[in-house]
Image (cartoon, rainbow, N blue to C red; front, side, top):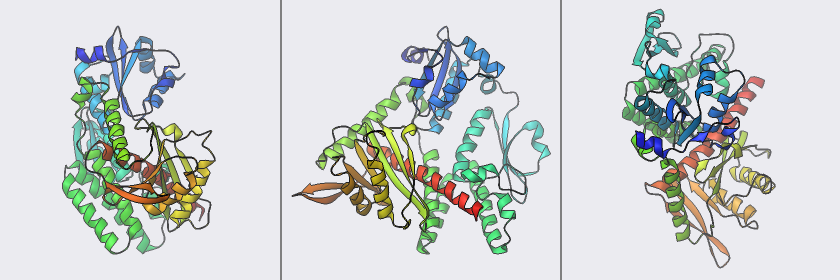
Length: 448
């Protein structure tokens, strides 16, 4: 325990300290007299810590900031790792200001209510009998951990926390209450209404399976449903289900043991360096001229039958997502279902900003040879290397020049650091494109 305290660099607190902090998930520790007085977690360290320097702080937070002299942080790979590491450090250090997590005399429960549209809510033990339910989970000693878990689940299987009303709720606009019971009840077509109601109940059923610990059977059910949709050529629905499966695997797969972060606070950086080193070795095998991989950009397109077509650009600096450099594109060209033309439009729009947005060391295009060839042609004169990433078998599509002609080579990733890196980049590009697409699609529904 003391070994970690000596390893962690301590930064003296100043009003602008957060400006130089990373935008990655992690855990932060406030110190007084070199002893930890508060441990917290963040999806975005920079954004979270900046909130402590606001003008209107709660009394408890103000007392913390008056006491704190230094701050340290440990970067991790995911929100779930941050959740687990925070709990471990609180248990180790018992910091003064972690009163709720350290000594919560009123544990929190998760309830799934017994209603026409079951809600997923949290409740204290004294309030459990006030709401009839079909399932109760808990008690959980840390309310923060409970809400953190629910937040991750909601991104995969959206649910409602509200009772039936007349208008679609705010969360429905960002895909966290989808389909929203309020919106379902407003549908006049009974067949369509029944379809969305079944979809909502399926989300609740999946949440119950996950909270009951039936993870493997849930994955098998989802994969079976995805195959059925694909066999019936419902490719858009199958793709949506595939995304849910990927997210589910992300939050349930084995994580780096939190003890490793305690032993080595720089583990996050060490893992990123290993990923980039291995990736560069692969590119060198195919004689790709890549001097550095400090800045990698990935592009993806999202649409439903050509409507509300969007594209995303996500940027990774030294293997870590740099969200301040992300960009959304609303596709202007009329053939929104033509991925090649959409990619060409995005490539040309990106080229116009090489000086002010920054120049990538490598571009990754989410797709096969067709999408890759579009970017290759646009960025050839700029001498920016481009590769494709095909979803099928996680295959890297690499252009190899031979006598002036670009041939393609396929590299199928085996499990390891580079596969982790590429999946993280691709998934983030896909998530970012889908989030903007869903926002435009929801807006078009309201307008219609």
